[in-house]
Image (cartoon, rainbow, N blue to C red; front, side, top):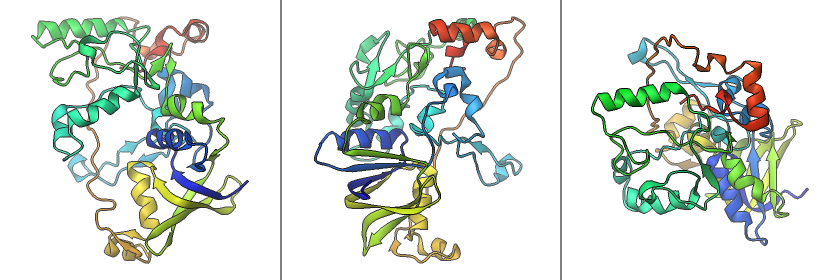
Length: 331
């Protein structure tokens, strides 16, 4: 197997799968995609409601935050996907774009109206599409839950009684209201970035996908990235050489971490870690932001909650008809 490529992509998550597909569409371009995790064949990845079973396993980086003084010093668990598809293979499958105002603060080229066409290109909506909210022929399936829980109906009735606005679709630009959450599923099973982008490209001879390949550092030739040093599944230290570009798409945590290991970042931070600074870039590892959520737990007197999802008859429903509680994303 050659170790010479035009592009070397680190991380087969949501971004990496898209890049691998797009770049390898040119048969004259040699592309390598490095993924630290393994294949995404595990049944719990395909079963929508089973994603909590993937936490703290080989399919999860199993991260924890630093101590949070505002939360009595707790360290919060932060699941990150470690398999083909990345976190799109272990998350709750919710397709929620976010608020218009968030994008409009990002700067020129990234406003809501400017990024909206790219959402449409990605989306393959199967179901209601009021106000042409979604794209209809992209690679990412977006559907409604096939077996919605009765609790959702009760919750929506409560929202209506409280005077809240029912949205025509959850992802309309003005998201102040309630609506069913669309999910990345197709016919009752999870549909990840690997399903939508990577698998259609796997047979291309110019695309090499390396699983069990943990990147150690980006190799630099002066200020130019010339390749990626990684540890293979057998433990060997190898290098994938890039004639054109190295693309680091290893997620919000591992992308800056890899850059810092490579000597790219704030010199003071690097020296404290015993790393020789090669490229001064103070922003690396800064300004991390994540979406916040909180949970309200209530007791349900009826036997309709997902506590019953692991019963044998629910597994039969899923395996034979892709119906039942196991098609839930727990949302």
